[in-house]
Image: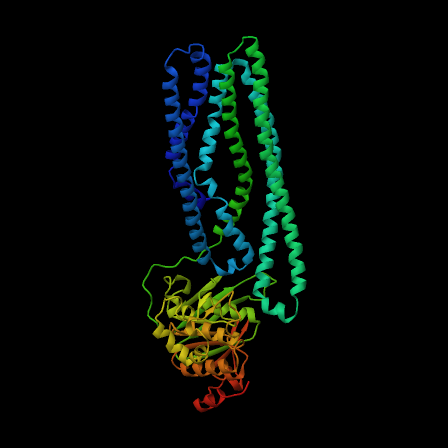
Length: 563
């Protein structure tokens, strides 16, 4: 996968491998010193070699410690850099993905896929290369043991072989448990997001206890899987410690027998014991790598699914002039048989100052048609142009000055009211306030203790009323002064004052903007110059009493209608 190869290509691998080579060489200082002390210095106590040898070993140990600290710093830095870089690229890929494809995946699964990137960093920080390189050096330790202790080298070879078989068995069990844990995490994330999103509905129907019991069952299932995973991982690590101790005991037991019979020296026995310990250290780390590799494979697959989402490629070309013009010709938008939002051969021409109302079909089809104009979806065939350019080809950040989509339930983001109205500083507060005054937002915000600095968003849903949230979402779209306004039943979540304010604003904009209305409200319908009926085979004009243009005085009186 390209993103994995790019992530692995960056980072000082050569420096880490050189440091690991130096550490491995320096780590031989203690066994060599032990061999020299017991076999040469102790039989000749009058020599002055001991002080020189001890000083050399101290220097070697100090250098080894410094190299280990430096290597650890590089590994941690590479891991943090990989996590930051790939998380940034993953979110950017997700934000530029095709919305029709992205909506097929639940938000909980997206959270799990994004979190999987952090679980891959160990394999791209350089630690994996270090562990594998240390594992390659294990035959060197075997060769040294064979040189020093002769046949005693068979003991660590046999123990290591048995441990490898056991590690393979534990690895397969761990992989199955990790797959179960990932599925349980997806289920838990989805449940939490559904519960938090529908919190008001849960409370209105008094379903808190039922959902609490449901979450207890999900959490219990997840906890049991986590227990099985932790148990198998701990068992594999404990087995490594047991085999390490078993190796030392067998070497000492067999080695003592050989020392007594004069087949090897005591220094050789101690040096072989120390070298055997050096063998188990990289093997134990390799076992940990094998355990993490099971999780890595699952995380890589999940991250790959995220990066495999089709993206929308924006054109690098000048922004067209704002004319308030829509041209749709032969557009088809097909979904599965279970999805009613399907239509073919759609044609629509709309110029600035014209207002059209689209009815018929089902809500999904009409919303998809407005979404095509707003650049949310790509048509399967045909051509949809906004001011002469495909909305999917607009340079980043420019389409909102040409077309604004007012949705049935407008989104507000976590931040202050000022942040939401100015799109987090993307537009001046002066321009945003012009729209808020027309929608009557300022009067209601002035009653709040913190005014425009009031926090709203995901965790602040009860701070302001849903009607005010809807008006804030509408004001954020209109603050960019788009030439085309798409109205997708945006009046349904408004209170009485909000309804009147939005209606008056559309009356004010009629004749200046291109308006495409999807609504069943008779007052908004009365604004339409013409009406169209959406059916699977296309758009056809309809003639209805409500389709006649409404006089300005009639519109003004309609604005005062009681809801």
